[in-house]
Image 1 (spheres, rainbow, N blue to C red):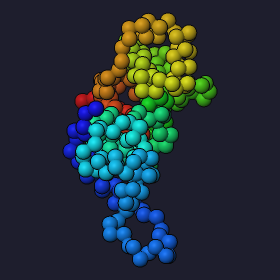
Image 2: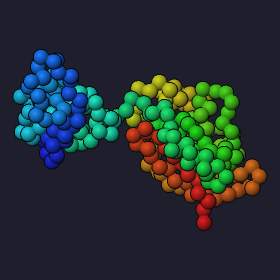
Image 3: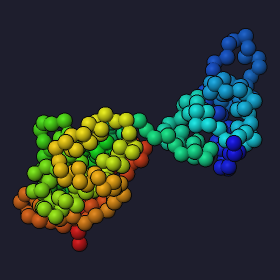
Image 4: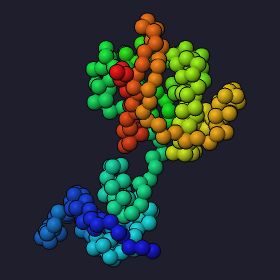
Length: 262
């Protein structure tokens, strides 16, 4: 097995160990005061369920590259956040673990941004399962309200195969959107292959839409994050927008901004 190749792995372990709160010492043992902050190597190794000899070699950069199971145990023992855990994995030359599901809560600052742009720029937020989480007032006016009922009423892929999509996008635009949405569903299933909601959506669209079946058979995976779109506003008619998608990777949320095209 190859050795750890990323510089700073052992230094990161030492720094995180120093930040872990040491257990309270019994009164009778306080005469042997700790010389360094945080946990001792033996305590850290025990918390991670590995030998102190192996943990010491990891800190010194002399151990073989740790397995993903060892890295997960270390992250748990250190109490790392998702971002800190991902950094640990990358330092060890491993890809960070995929999340089991997108975060269910939008960042408060992002919600304030949406409200602040209510009267100017349409903005929507959807998660990695392709469900709309929020729209500001301008986006609701442009795209119309979400359906009041239906299991997939918030799903942006399912919306692409409805009469509402054709009204907002037109015949040519709705075809482009359906192709993009189908590729997005394939990407989402690659990220969350066991997600029951996404798999049932795939079954639903495969059963009800010949257009979806044809597009799905092409095997495309979506990568487009920027596009020019013509959308039909209910009172102002056809308008041109530059659509930009921004990703909050830690929560797996997508922010879509519809800036007026110049």
